[in-house]
Amino acid sequence: MPEPAVVDRARALKRHAKYTGMPLREFCVTVTKGEAYELLTWFRQTADPKQTDLVLLDQAIQEAVDADDPFLVLKDFTLLGLEILPREQLH
Image (cartoon, rainbow, N blue to C red; front, side):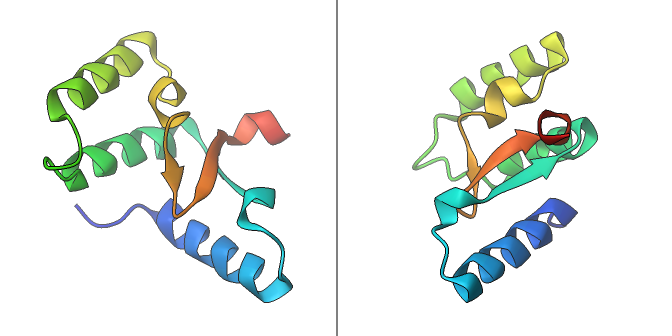
């Protein structure tokens, strides 16, 4: 699976933070629900089994899918050091 487009947005935000000298914690990457599911799939496919309990991750992803809320899992992740938030939360 190719990288989700949101990864490029996160890279651009990270470069912008570095350029401005602002702390990375001042920025976040916002994603739509569709992008959030794409991220979940990508996180799962790229997870290192030496560092991640894949069974636990699979269970968490399934619970998120069942609840139709990918942010149940993504709230515990960052993307290149950036918090991941639902796009609707900022509008």
